[in-house]
Amino acid sequence: MSVWVCPAAVMKYFALILLSLYLPVQARPALEKPNVVVIFLDDCGYGDFSHTGNPTIHTPHVSRMVHEGANFPQFYAASPACSASRYALLTGRNPRRSGLGSWVLGPGSKRHIHPQEVTLAEGLKHQGYATGFFGKWHLGTPNKANQLSPDAFPLAHGFDVWEGTNVSNDYDPGVDLIRSNPQGKTPIAGYEVIAKNITMKMELHDDLTRRYRDLGVQFIKDHKEEPFLLYLAPNMPHLPVHAGDEFKGKSLRGLYGDCIEEIDAMIGSLLKTLEDQGIAGNTLVILSSDNGPWIRFQDTASHPKYGEARLLIGSALPFRDGKGSTWEGGVREVGVWYWPGTIPPATVVRTPASTMDILPTAFALAGEPLPSGRTLDGRDIRPFLNGSKFPGSVPEFEFVYTGNGNNVVHAARKGPWKLHTKLYSQTGNNYGFKASPEKPLLFNVEEDPSERIDRSSEQAAVVGELQGVLDAFKASLDSEQTFWGAP
Image (cartoon, rainbow, N blue to C red; front, top):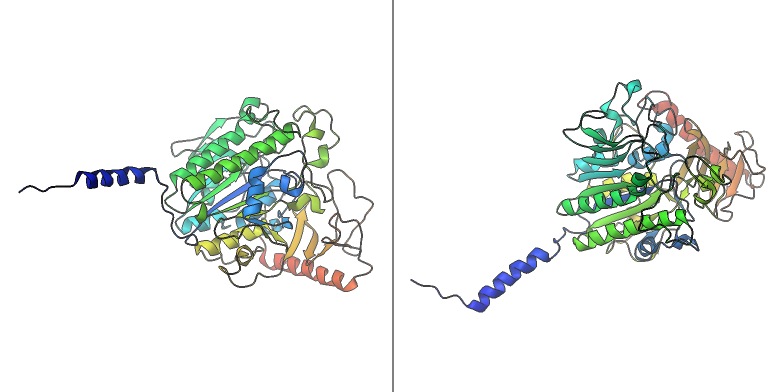
C-alpha cells in the first residue's frame, strides 16, 4: 500500500523545523520565576552617567534602561565601603549585623560572610534557579587565619559558578583571579587560581570587563530555558582604572570615561543577549554600585599603582564627599531597574530605596519565603515597579547609615530627613560641621541634597523621631547579636 504525500506539504514541514532552530526559545510567563540580573559596579559615582547629567561620559545603554524601565533617583548602597556593601546586597541586612569586624575584608582577614546568613543566591537556588557570579567577591578569602575555610568563598553561599577576584583589584600582593572548578585545588578544593597578584598585570586588568561580559553572555545562553540569577560585579572603576583596547581613547572624559563607557557597552551586550534569546520580558535587570567615588585621591597627581589618580575617580555630585563617608556622596548611587513589559517605560520612583531591598523583592518574585531567625532591613518593593501587577504598599523607608571601621552607626534617614550623630571622611574634612549623639546635625536631603543647612535647632520633633530610629536599631542589635557574636 503506497501513501502519497504532497511535496509542498513536505517542504513546508521542513521549513518550519528549520525556522524553529533559529527562533528564540519561548519564555515562560513574565511573572513566573523571572530571571534576575544584578550588575554591581565598584566605586562608581552617582554623576558618572548620561542620565544623571555627566556631560562627557556617554552611557546610551544605561539611558535606555532608564527610559524603558524605572529610575530611582534616591537609591542607596548600604555602606560607603566594599565588603559591607556587598554583604548587605546579598543578605538584605544592614552591615552592622554582619559581624565581619570590619567594613573591608583584606585577603588575610580571618572572618568572612557567615555560613548561617541566607544570601540572594541561596534563596533563588532553593527555587530552582541557576546561579552564576562573575566579578569581585570581597566577602572573605580562605587563608591561614581561618584554616582555609571553604565558607569564605562564593560556592558555599549559593552560587553554582564563579570567576573573578577575591578582593579589590588594588591589593598588592593578595588579589588573585580565580574561578570555580570541580577538579580545582587552589586555594581550596573546588577552585583554581587563573593568575596570582594581578594588581600590576596591566593586560589582564585591561581585559577584566570584557572577561566578565563574555562570561555573563554565555551564562545567559546556557540557562535561557530555566530561571537564573546572574550577579555581575565588575572590578571597575575602582582604582587602578583600566579599559579594554577597543575603548581606550574613545571617551571625552579620558581613561575614566573609557572605563565607564566599556561598562555601558557590556550592559548593552547583556541586554541584547536577553533579547536574542527571547527572555528579555522574563528578566529583571538591576544596576547600582557598592559606594561612591574614592575622593581620597582627588588631588593625587602621581601614584605608583594608580597613576594620575585625580583624573581617575568619578563624581558624586550633587552630593557631598564620597567613598568611606556617610555623607550622601558615599552611599547615594545610581539605581536602575529594567524589566520590559512589566515595569512601565519612564517610571520614576521618587521615594528612597536601597540595595537591601533587592533580596526581599527577588524572593517575593521567585516565591521564596524570607529567611527566619534574623532581622531583614530591606523591603519588598514590587509595588514600585508596577502597582497594577503588584498591588499593595511598601513599608516606609528607614535607613541607618553605618561605616568607618566596624560598621559603626553614623546617621539615620526617614522621610526627607537625615540625622548625623557622627561624621567621617577619608579626606579628613568635615566641611565645618561637628556631630555627636548629644548634638546631632539634621538635613532635609530632598530640599538640600548637598547637606549644607543644619535644621536641628528648628526641628526638635524630627530630631527626636530620628533618634528613635537609631535607638530602635541599636536595641535590635543588642537583642539579636550577629552570627559571629557581638557586633
